[in-house]
Image (cartoon, rainbow, N blue to C red; front, side, top):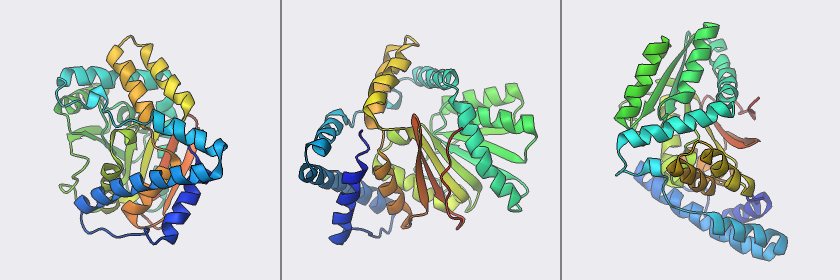
Length: 310
């Protein structure tokens, strides 16, 4: 209900007709600023279009605006001790395991990595950005080890305690996996084409449109095959369902984070806008595999398919 694709399409048509897109940027700072401004302008235009289309479109628009928030989750609070942040990301890992999400993510990612290996590369290299304590990276590395695949996995985050915990678990499980401290906004310490696949899982909503655009634009430089972003599907149902699931762990701050997150999920049209601004192209697909939206951007010239989670 909160995707509002018809109103979004009309709003984009209006903005293109007015010559406001496409536009160019010269630096990451300019990209971040312009993307934030344009997405805000797009939402204003969508409001105008929704009014013109009538009550059946205007009501969801009002609900969307009522639900939206720019508040940060507790786990993003700079003042929160790292040990408490670790407990929150561990709670998220437990929730994902309970919902059997990681096997679905891994199956989809391995299908993309299989293309890389078949394309002649001796080894497929994966980098996960903002990986927290490493739940997905570990699940992927476990499957790589089990199937004896030519895949190396790297997890990354900016918080040192997450890196320590991830490397501890990787060593304990003897996995083809390492974690490194990395600022997702600044990947300049990497070499061009360092990785074949870059992944951002369940974290897209933690970043502003401009920040997300910067991460995608950098991925285009340091990744050969694709960027994959996985996050919650923007809907009223998940606005209630996510905090309800989070509350089952009995951690009040985690349940509150669930409610905040659900209010911040991007709609599919918003993700499409961010991807196009960041790359200057339409080499992306956005698919829904309930309760998730999947953004895939190809950098290898291959027409992007529409991957779905099993």
